View 1 (cartoon, rainbow, N blue to C red):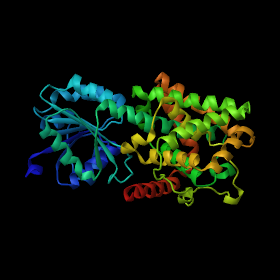
View 2: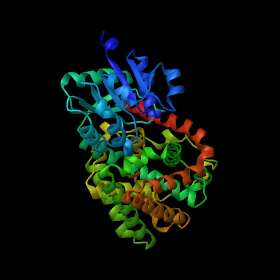
View 3: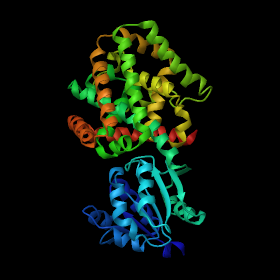
View 4: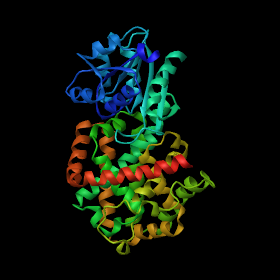
Length: 427
């Protein structure tokens, strides 16, 4: 009976909004959506009731979902929020919650309930068993339960947090991870180098780096820009990651072996031994990942890699006192893979020693590391200044360099994510 009387409305219909719409309609909930250039095709396939504008959606809907970019949420909620139906519950699915919650508090009537949420995966990833953060910000228990029942159709694993907890965790798990992969892509583009043609990027760990970097660049720039620039916690994390890259790179080019090795191992021992103890590793072996490769270089011709990106990530976590394993409850597939390969490197003594030697003395990889250092500094500066236009230009220029391999790579990347996801569910 509840599904017959409760109507769900959507304002904004990007890729994630369309994914939500299809799942909610499939579950039998009544659905309406604001008309825009995207809704005609989406509504035809999803069975949605398309209304004239956000005012029409707000006035009749019992549960309203704002699915807009973080940088536009205040403007859009300011436009349609005052029309919200008395007693309705309103939520948003932006990846940064502070500006969204502030917009709701500013523009929604006092008799409206606020329950926000965030699916920690992209629109092409199966939502089943993925983390779904729920934020009961200003809502009765009854309204909160309605949101949970509606969103249960996603089949996701629900995690309840405050919006400040959410933003702090996503800064740790997403913003810094994205900058690492963005910096790899920029470095390869600057070198005019496809990593799958290079001996240093062969093997399971390298497959994650290449596949996930290209996966990010195949998506829309504003998803990552909003998460990094609009989240106050993210700027601190991104700055420290770039600083860790810089500090380690300076020790590398001066070949300060004792200082470099001591710093790397101190961070690694804290994160991957004292913190996790006897916990089963995320990756039992990087052989899991060998088949997900774009490389045209035979594995027997592999050359050592410094893994500066992974060494710097561990140094960043250690410097900021972050325990990445605390955040696995809100993990994205990307973060789990990133943590998994970093953990594997530090728990494999032979590979870690090879990485340290390569970082200090292998001149074949020095040019790549220099460009990675420069790229990480550039991305950190872009995020620190908060310049969306600069972010877009940097992102799209690199994406254009790799776009011919996006389709093939995304198939491999999806299989890789499914492997790790299935392993997680079976643990």
